[in-house]
Image (cartoon, rainbow, N blue to C red; front, side, top):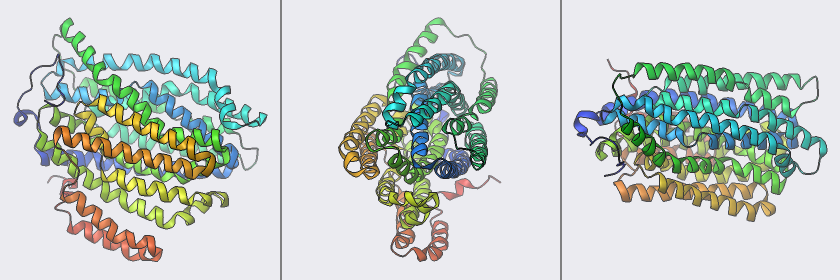
Length: 511
């Protein structure tokens, strides 16, 4: 049986525990719509922040800022120890198998190690900041000094970043998407935009300072971490079940939790490395100015990843419940419906980015127009990645975290290998080729494994219909940009005609 673990009670029948597919889709739609809307706002705020930094700091200091934030995200991802998957999978599984009394033990198993490890990594980042700065900032003493200070400013906030993410993961494990949307997607992004914007305005009257921008970008984690703590406590108390838990049950759950989560901890870091290490490699091998061009040109990828993550986080607990009770039919239907929605939202973005890349890159400054080939490569790879849906998460929720780890490590080897080979020759474009190769590998490999192990695949009627509609409407825009005037209403009309296969009725409120 997929996802079986020792130490948990025998499965009960799917009919008594797993919601009907339509009901699950409706719940995923409500949470996913809110989360994707919040993700769009967060992604848009991130684009504006990138624009402010690029304009205020100039290519070299902007490259140092993007390299520093990439290091910050990597360290924060490592400090979470894979609990962003384990603290969704296990609460969902415990509820689905009637073991709600173990939820408190589950949280006490996952949270304290994150706090301790994040503090240790923050100290390590502080101590190694001069070495990281020297590696990525070249030989400029002033730039190395600013870069070192910026890295140390960010190091102070590493525990808050990790704690924020893991506490919001706890709320999602209880099927509550609202804290993630309100606190992370909206509040944190809005505070970052305001703080970085204020730093940008201040730079008009004084010399722009990299450490100031780093502080402005990271400071919002403090209030958001506090509010996330209240949200997690409220979710836990609402689902609290008072029942005796034996010492043996606690011991078995701790063991099973970390057997499941440990591979995911390494995989999560490797996954983040896929998204961030390329910026560091461009800075080290090609220089800070090409790193800035690459970061700006690839910003739309983060926007699409936000949309994917927003929908995935809503589907994740429901998919875990279906797979934990052996209801593969419900899991398959939910996976295909969610992929159809993802393609419907993201493919037009990818195609529009391809069509208008020269125009929007110039908004960041004339020097960033050199990133057009980067955009073309990454947007094409994103079409493949989003067409596979949240396949990485499906593999993890099926209990295959070891296979998930292997896939991500292979993809990371691909991107690092191609980066080392191509960045010295092609600069930012070499990094784009490396990341594109990794994205293809990291989606097609798990797609084959998911199908082989569970017979699940994302290519339902809705997915294929959304792909055909997006290609038909926006593929022409790539050739004739002015056609966007007709493409948008045609796409809306086509989505309405396909509302049945796409299950768009799930987004309606129940009467």
